[in-house]
Image (cartoon, rainbow, N blue to C red; front, side):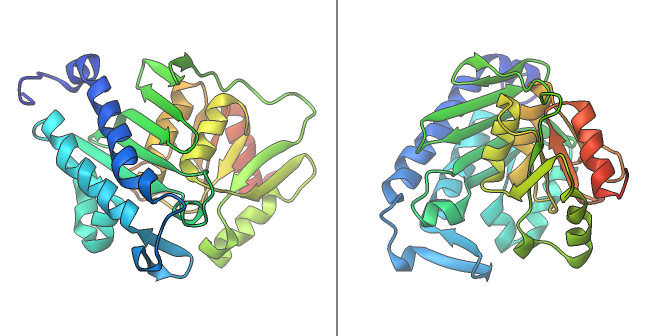
Length: 281
């Protein structure tokens, strides 16, 4: 039993609007009041000058960490800032309890610079399987949701990723060179070929949303952090897309993936990107 809800399926059948309200409230009370109003003392570096955290990140995650487990008793939260403070928090992804995976401000760099290309990401997973996700871009007024087996939606409208038009260059958003190893850089060079237009990514969550809408063909990412990928990967899957690592396997939110990996509008595009990343013709 999960409180008065017998299964996660029952929870998702009755309480998704409560999760949406929590996500919107976190953004409205802790993120948007600081957008384009951040003071210097509200911005800190984590691993370096390109890895930033703000009071908006911390306070939005604190709010969601308090509210979400109350909606689903017995669940736990794995948030980006909590894991930064204590890496052992990440281990909950490998347990049996339902896990809320939270990125309070995905695209912190954009947020700090006053760019509206950021979002709040929440996913609900259990035993390594993402069951539902919420991608909220408050500065753009967009909310995308997905439930495994139930489809993907943007502001209530169904999303269908479709397939790239034949003969058109594939547009692929890639990890920024600042965040890649030499080996990963060599893999990404495979995308520098005729018929492909790679570019550095922005907010991962919004890149996934663009794939689900058919506005972007694929990604090629070189990091595993579940809070960046869980919500978007389910959104892409439910819109008809696919994801694969260079080992040819679906990406696992629990870790241990062979990188880089791709998410794409359809299975054929995912396989094509993997071929290019591994030196295939």
